[in-house]
Image (cartoon, rainbow, N blue to C red; front, side, top):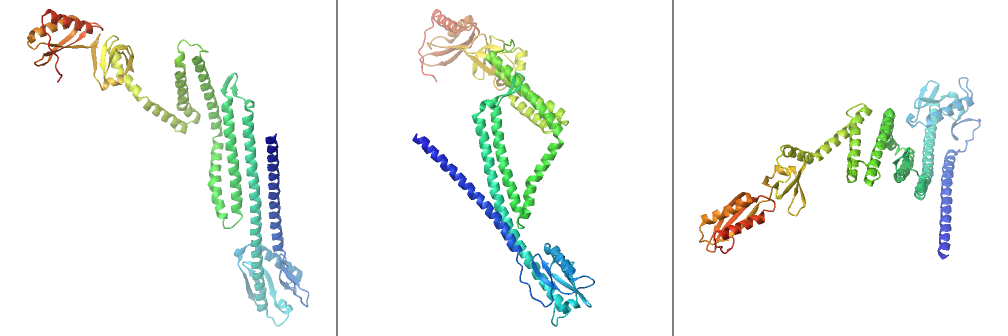
Length: 521
């Protein structure tokens, strides 16, 4: 009960903290918005005091700022019309700093004030006289030009300040929105993954009729991966969009906006264009890949049933079903890449065709030892150089030949175990064909005073009586005895004991005295 109460208190504290955080965040958003609006309004509204004049003037304004006043009509235009035209001209050049400052072009009796190539106002002697005092037209036009320069400079500075403040406010506001969206996307993705984990039975398998093409476990894994990718892509899109917006708000960073947009959007648009152009090919390739996947799945299920004993096939034992399944499915995929890819793409130089060629080359390199064994075994098998029953010795391995295949020799050693010798080993080691039995060798020491011819004749007779091929050698002679070695191939596999018995019988019947075995040299 205490744990439940503490968990409830922790949940309420977390909920209260989340609500307080949201309130603070919303307050910051509204504060930034009101600061931006208030700053722009405060900068725009700065009407200076009007100067009093004896003659009621018509003011020429730049926004709410009085620049100068006109008091006389000219060339059929009233004072009000002239003031309105001058105000409109000032508004048109305000947003274009490249126009430069005000300049005066004078003619006899007139002075035209320009800002760049835009005429602002045309002044005459009547305007100079209406201004009061002993003011010439040149001096009056110069004062008007100076006031226009001051007004444009001040308004441009205030507009720049307002723009910067407004941009900063928008930057903060957009950052808060991006942060909220970032967290919202993370929450939605987390909920989706938890739902998939908590409801595994609600995600079915992909079936084609009664054949289960993709299992539910694989579908759940694919859905989880897709949700994780979508989560990261959405967060990247939010961060990227906010970064583009933030960089575009300021003149110093606006150049980086185009670079960043070109770095991501240009390759993406090119990729989408290529995908759109290759859409029919993609559809056909998708259908072909789906058909190949179904076929591979069907083959896997078939051989799986054979391995489990559910399906009985005369030509395939159960223990070979697994390896055969791997070979058949790999062959299907490889042949599809090599043969079907050029038909689908319409070219022999596509990526799939090259992948098939590379796979074939890799398979050929991997099969080189096996093919070499088969090539070395062709003369042995078809030349019948070895037959079952022969006793052979090859590469330090000896035994009775039980089977001869293209890839290996199957021998049986003295313990009855199988020894499989690859045919390729015969290219580096000589093969000794001994016959039907292994080579037997016996050493006997006789009295050194016995005549060697007598001893040799007795031993040769004993060896020929029991062996197909025999050899008698005098190994050494010393004061203790003469060492003789009798070697031969017995007439049957168990003839080594018969050879020993024949040697002992021949020595005894010949009256040959035995010697003493000395140390070997």
